[in-house]
Length: 351
Image 1 (cartoon, one colour):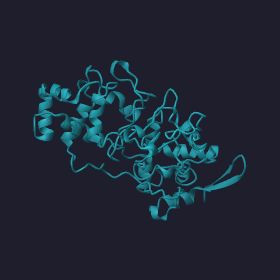
Image 2 (tube, one colour):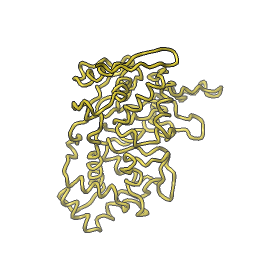
Image 3 (spheres, helix red, strand yellow):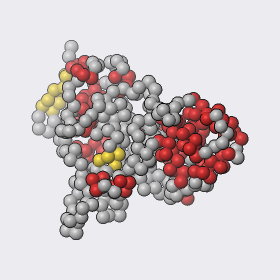
Image 4 (cartoon, helix red, strand yellow):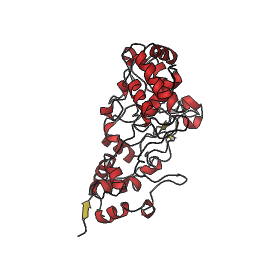
């Protein structure tokens, strides 16, 4: 017997054929309804994660490197105070974020941006909200030297570890040398971070053929994600990210919390206020959301997208300002109903 839900929204009555949606999404993606995306957007279909994360040829996987990287990730000796580690702001219990709007660092200094989860580090190339790190190995060392984070020097951190016999043994096992350098520290931490790829989520189990892994509401949310909500303009592929940079209207241009995003790295006017699209994997665990931690809940994020996000207008003094940020044209009012928003949130929680 078909399961069809009749929903009464503010303006109309509509029906959802859950059996038909489930049947479609259990097939190969070539048989799925086409996603609703803007013209000229190139996308990769969403799918289950691979069984193992990708590792670059210049820093291949080894279990000894992962084990060393995990120890270094949790090692406060990499900070000048011997009190702060990578794990301080990237806690497993918070989806490898820290649950704070902005993170605390050296001497309780407050950071400028929300700590991103490192759980999907194996995907994409440039790292940080603004892409200032050219790869994960470079990213792994930057917090060590950031004065508001670990406030140390990577060469000094390597020198400190060279005086510890246990680390000399571990580096010998992982890299074939007892000579500890900052480059090897970065490679070990990066290898561990790549291993943190989430495994066996409800969505992944469903995509691999477990028809009961997702309930009707979640499957409906998946369909809304791909169609009416237009999420795949930016969130697609197995990582649920296009790895690009977009302006959501959260630059606070000319105000106290101004952040020009990618522009600070590239000096390209088109990058003013643009931030890298985060992966949606583990999204239910990584609140608060956005580069500034503005939204404490996922529901708030969805309501903002439903309204079309933010489109600031220049004041009289800014009308001729070439740096005045322009919100991405990919953002539209979505007119999702309360029921559709709830289903979309339910789907995101399967990730």
